[in-house]
Length: 356
Ligand SMILES: [Zn+2]
Image (cartoon, rainbow, N blue to C red; front, side, top):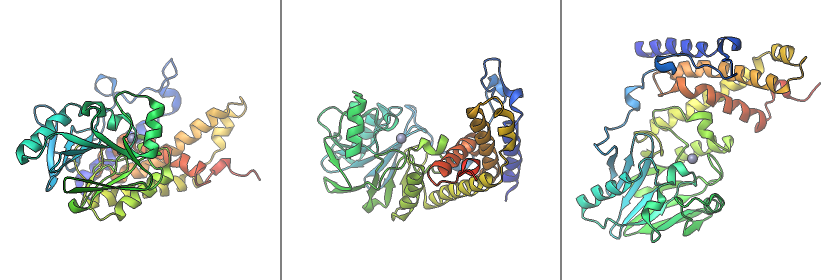
């Protein structure tokens, strides 16, 4: 363990215990929780480890980089898209609105340099979520849009003009061949969303799967706000079974390595172990004792689960401070999601199990 890590560890424990100040001390008159005060009243967090940051953005606010041969990626530091330049046009995977018109500039950068056609002919949707495909409208009606059947159903229900319906759908697998290049799309069941797919470029040893692995960072809040947590952890396992050397995770500023994937899986495994230990050890009596006389069932659940999340997170956030960026930002929320999944998906119900 490095000195930097030990310093981070002490700091993260301090920050987490600051969040554990007795509830009354954190209550504002309106009932909202006060954040630990930093500059401007916002909380302070640990610095981002240098290895978690991506390449510098250009003056327009994006970076486009070659992955291998004619496969490229684009980022704005928050979101990512993937771009395959072929002899017949460009295949774009996802169209995040925060990158927006910079997607068009990135396509121009690539195709001016390699002399291949600059028109986007195909758009692949990783999943239906607007934050990843909400700029699809920029590519016009003529582009072929490829997605899972469930993505089409969800987009039809959403009725969002910025996310036009797919023109080609598939159920299990689809091989997209364009201008001498090839992408293999696969659906392995619901995970982060009901429709999230795997996009594999075998010739480029690259896998794009979005909202499943976050290279250099802990997962987004509540385990990537996943609708199916067991499916999501299984998607992490499946992602690592593909033979890739480069991962496009869809978020943040850099690409992923296999070591990033292994580390993220270990974070989730550690979180689950800590959640199981907490559910077994945390005494529910104080929570029932305080709120049962008033009949406030939700207060019992809220305070028990929040304390369980804090205890679950503490050793995990400490272990990953200085290793994965934002371990101090989202580990309590991720612990809450893990605890709730253990309760309702795995049946580890703690004090709410079968009454003796
Ligand atoms: Zn999503």
